[in-house]
Structures are given as structure tokens and as C-alpha cells.
Length: 471
Ligand SMILES: [Zn+2]
Image 1 (cartoon, protein in one colour):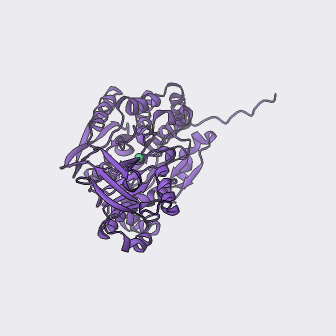
Image 2 (cartoon, helix red, strand yellow):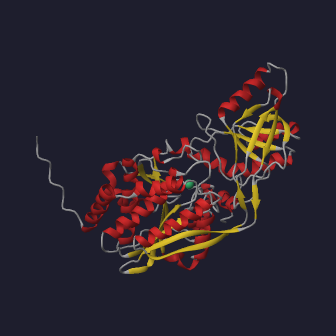
Image 3 (cartoon, protein in one colour):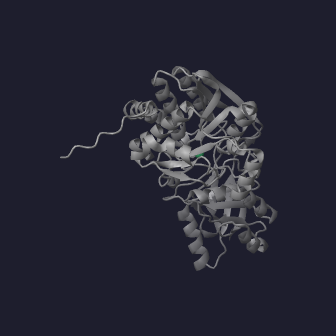
């Protein structure tokens, strides 16, 4: 064996990063937090008893960790929603039972409705225009694809208009094909800001979509496909949800804030382990590991567990509004919301001026494969409101191959997190957070309103902000 060349002596910052990374890999509590939220509590739909329990549990846990200024900040969600039963029968073919689940904030059918099935392709505007003449009283079936981040974001912003266009054309309900394996159903709010969807909207198992398409195409029985739906969701008035906040106060520049954010809420068909108990757990372990260093960094780190994310980033939008006077002093917002998959780098959200600083952040984790900066900008998680204010905002770039197979389904459970990959995520978050808070110079500047506008128009993120009511 040959002797390895001795590594160059490390700077003090690198030593702290090594201590943090070591702390996470040896004593990390992220799997415990993940299990506490997704096994112990379960689904955490904003406003539900599960979400409430998660807010209270994490507030207590932040206090136990010795974080400063631990509190919960309320914001109003305009409409409450509770899942009821949803039944779908293929009445034209022996009353076969179809596997469906309501989208959240979808209205019920007010009694059973019956209609002919009309396929509307992927549900793009041209598909609806083509089917327009056949939609009166129909039950529309859309088959979009949602297996990549780009597709998920497209659907996220397309579905509210799809439901509205179908309603205008006289359709009675909307079925959306699940793109998940093995009869797993997907759910999400159809519209933003907890607005009730224009039509009863249900997800339907892909196996049943295949059946309907074969029966329709083969025409073996010569009959039109006719469905009966009975959906009984409960819709109610406004309610308050809360963001959970705790801090590690900076030792020199306490008024300057590094925000670490992740959403605590989930959808309700599964326990939301990857989306996003993982992000919340990583945030909690980041707080614990940095506290364990024994001395705080130069700047304040503020840990924020948002709720209302699934309904259109409601908690993070409310947070940025409420803390408007601190935006200039908010150095960066680091967000995690792509599960527990292997980290590869950071999304810079349309910024190219931060490349050198981001490369610096990734250095302690280089040997784990970190090194990618993805410049694209999108508004699909809690970074959006920070981005609209010009605050440097980064989302951890992760391997999303497991994440999107179970996203918003019953299958989003703790076993989908690989403990080694997840520890690498947490170490990435902890070391980056500390580095930004400790840096002698500011991590990056706040963009001016004009610069934000230019970036938003170029990346087309402005349309997303408008749809979500952020802009
Ligand atoms: Zn999420």
C-alpha cells in the first residue's frame, strides 16, 4: 500500500463543517423525527387533527432542543375541507366498482350523478376545445402524466383551469388518471388558496383507466360507458393554521436571519413521509446538530415549519407577509421538499450570481456527490414567496426517483427513506445552513423589484406566482 498524501490543514470553518457532518452521521435523530411525524401522527392535512398535533408536537420539540423564541404564528385558511366517502360505479357494464379518491378541496356530488364517460386526453386546453361538443352532462376523464418534477408543476398549475373549462362546457365531474403504480391513488388540492374546485374531481386508478379505455375502444358490448359517482366531502368556513418557529440566535449579527424552511403539512391519503415529513425531520435535526456544536454561528438561524403548503404555499406566503420588515435582513431561505433521496446539489431558483457561493456550500459534501447547481426557477414549494421578494432561496436538489412514485399516495411511508441517503441530505442542509450563518460576508444580495420581475418573466415563474396569488 502507498501512503496517501496528507490533506492540507483545514480552515476553522471546515472543521465546524466536519463536526456537523459527523454529528449527523453518528447521532442524527432524523429517522426518529421522520417516524414521529409519519408513523406516530400520520397524515397532516392542513386544518386536520393530524396537522394540529404535528404543530403542537414540533413546537414542544423545538423547546426541548433549547431553541430560542419558539412560537407558532397563525394565518387564516379561507375554506375548510374534510374527506367523505367517494364511490364510482361503471353502471353500463354490470355496476363494476372503480377505484377512486377525491382530490382535496373537491366538492361532493350532492347525491349520486350519472353521466357518459368522455376522454379529454391529457386535459390541455386544446384537448378541452376538441371535446367541447360532447361534454354536456359528461364525466370527463383526463390522463395527464405526472412522473417528473416538470410534469407535476405543469399539472399543479393546469388543473384549476381544467376543472373550470370542463364546468363551463357542462361536464358533471372530472376523473384524473393516476400515474402511480399498482392502483395507488393520488390526491392534491385542485385549486389554490383552499378554493373549492369548480367540479367534483376524483383520481382514478390507472388499472381502471386501462379497463375503461379498452372497453371504450373495443366497443365489445356496443354500449356507451356510463358512470355513477357519489362523493360526500364536507366543506366549511375559514380556520386558522399555524407555522411553527424556533431560532438559534446569532452571536454577532443576530439581526441577520438565515431561514431554514420545510412544510409540516401533507396530503391525506398517506402519512406524507417523503412529502414532507422528511424535510421537517431534516430541519429539526439541523437545529439539534447545530445546537450540539455548543456555540452559535455569527447570524441568527430561524427554523420555520410551514403549514398550508399543499394548498398553495399558504404558510410561507403568510410568513413573508408578516415578516416584511425583516426581508432586507433575511440572508437566504433554504428549503427542503423533495423527500429523502440522495442530494446532488441545489436549485438556485433563477439566480446565476450565487454560483460561487453555492459551490462553497457544497465543498464539505463533495465526496458524497454534491456538485450540481440547477438554475431553473419554479414556484411549487415554500421558496416561492422568498423568491418573489428577491431573497436568495435555495431548494435542495435530490434524486427524485422514489419521491414521485409515491408522491401524495398511501405509499408515501417511512420505509421509502434510505437512512444513508437521508443522513446525507441532513448533513448537506446542516452544513450549508451553518456556512451561510457563519460567513464573514453576506451570502448573496437581495434582488431589486425590477430584477425579480425580469427573472420571473424570463423563467415564466410570474404566471405561477399569479396563479398562487403570491404576485
Ligand atoms: Zn411537499
